[in-house]
Image 1: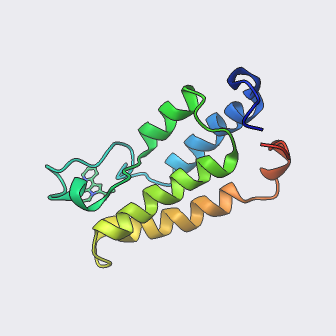
Image 2: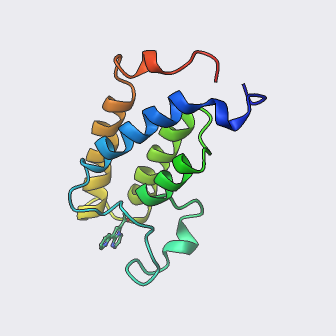
Length: 121
Ligand SMILES: CC(=O)c1cc(-c2ccccn2)c2ncccn12
């Protein structure tokens, strides 16, 4: 529950520290490794209101900012959807995001991952 003090969620933090590299390996060209800058993507910060990338997700894990697996999954989906919003469908970035979204969600929703998540968040 949200009343639970932060330090009492080691199981979730350890799970996320295991899941993140698994997801990052699905992005071998590291398109999603770092925040997208306006210099590499003109107008990006005007179009994408909630940017997200793997380095930010890693920092949020270390800062204990994820209370549930769902919050972590939501950031992953946001990151992929941002790329499919800014980039046109015929670009490498859009195609990489679409593939990453589907293969990543398969990992995050796998039966073997679910038992490690406490039923109460
Ligand atoms: C994720 C994304 O939208 C993205 C990553 C990159 C990117 C990521 C690493 C190196 C070079 N480009 C990018 N470049 C242009 C337009 C969009 N992007």
